[in-house]
Length: 169
Ligand SMILES: [Zn+2]
Image (cartoon, rainbow, N blue to C red; front, side, top):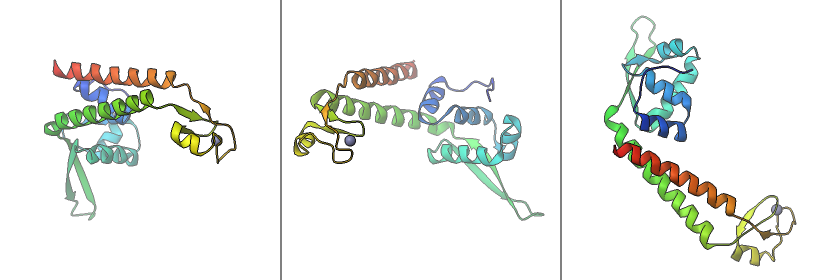
């Protein structure tokens, strides 16, 4: 499901990272207020899936709804709309939080030697307490080469910084 309506490119990046492409498509469909059933029809997916996606977005404050009772059936219908006013706050919050988290992880990877077996990974102090033997699998805890982890973290940090730069433009 891909539609052509444009959406704030930074929002697209962040939604893709933090949620999924499907959430991006839902946001694109909300260029004007719509009922969940209509979005489902337009995207060719089940209304229950659309509602789940909308609820995820609602939990982040990115959409809101008006609930209306159908007088004939007694059922409720929901008219969903985007909250443009909340987008910036969400983006800043997500990007800053993620960046702090990644930097914290990077610091701890740099400062601490980690030891691992096939099933777990522990810091050096803990490995010493365990006499370098894993209580789960009885395997030896050997020093963990974290070069790959550090490289991945640096890559993720660079990605967030690129998005932050794009956002400032
Ligand atoms: Zn183990």
